[in-house]
Amino acid sequence: MDGETAEEQGSPAPPPVPGGRLEPKKYAVTDDYQLSKQVLGLGVNGKVLECFHRSTGQKCAMKLLYDSPKARQEVEHHWQASGGPHIVRILDVYENMHHGRRCLLIIMECMEGGELFRRIQERGRIQERGDQAFTEREAAGIMRDIGTAIQFLHSQNIAHRDVKPENLLYTSKEGDAVLKLTDFGFAKETTQNALRTPCYTPYYVAPEVLGPEKYDKSCDMWSLGVIMYILLCGFPPFYSNTGQAISPGMKRRIRLGQYGFPNPEWSEVSEDAKQLIRLLLKTDPTERLTITEFMNHPWINQLMVVPQTPLHTARVLQEDRDHWDEVKEEMTSALATMRVDYDQVKIKDLKTSNNRLLNKRRKKQAGGSSASQGCSNQ
Ligand code: I85
Image (cartoon, rainbow, N blue to C red; front, side, top):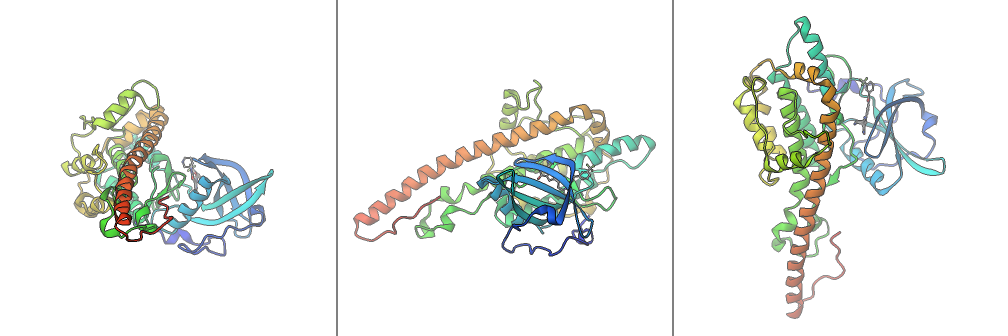
């Protein structure tokens, strides 16, 4: 399950250069693509439609975004990530007017295998016929693939911040399908302001200014913990029992890290796996594993020693299928809460640290040295 090679044949020309500058095509997308009425899904910033490349016939997915700074950010971040391992690839970007509004159109490779957990759930149906159960080692392989995507993003200083089941899609329905991450609608650059617009010598920059970048990335690590938990048992570690997407009780349990590994689903799962989950679901984001630590964990980097224990996952997903939409909504709300909470921590930190720097500068200026003027830390 390590290919992002073979499936890439026949992409519409000219192939965009990943890492190169993004220059959206200004002529009509319909010159190159035949749009179909088939809606593949609704994203954070816009809907996704099926389409076909006119000259090659290749089936693709088109995301329609109304132009806004947020939409531009999504396109930029996705473009920067496109070509990375286990990331849904962008084939083309257009900028068109539609009913008097400027639109951005992202043409992506079509992920015809559907969502990650749907595929596992289907095995719960098939399993009744005596097929192979979903195993702990397979779960580890999936976690390594998702981790590879996150590692790439974090190395590019991008936090995805919306890693959740419905954004993990398979390239095809075949056995050799590749799992990939999509939707960069909440992605954020984590490069520190302090380093991009240095108004002072970095030697004495306050640690709080450098520190907060951790929170955005740690959001992705929490997601990895939740996805890994569900992969191993079929239900989430935290859930609302009121029918609300996120209840006060659920929020409290997340904050306090109250979850368990109940039997019978967890009785045969390895201690290594449980330990890894505990490190990912740490309530304090600064204590959570980083992506490098995660990728170096033996459960991830030594797949061959992960036991091939059959799991309850496929059966539980199949039996609880009527609750799956709620599970997805709950994770969506939990991530939204987390992004807001972490942003607030950041604002607080930046305020206090800026004051300290300002004070430092005032002192310096009073002493006669000239500090740089008009630097903004935005
Ligand atoms: N192909 N979150 C849930 C989909 N190919 N999908 C979502 N944000 C996006 C939809 C709503 C993800 O950015 C989304 C985005 C992009 C896609 C996307 C990209 C490329 C697809 C929102 C399919 C598909 C195609 C054929 C068959 C099947 C699925 O969704 C299935 F297997 F399900 F039948």
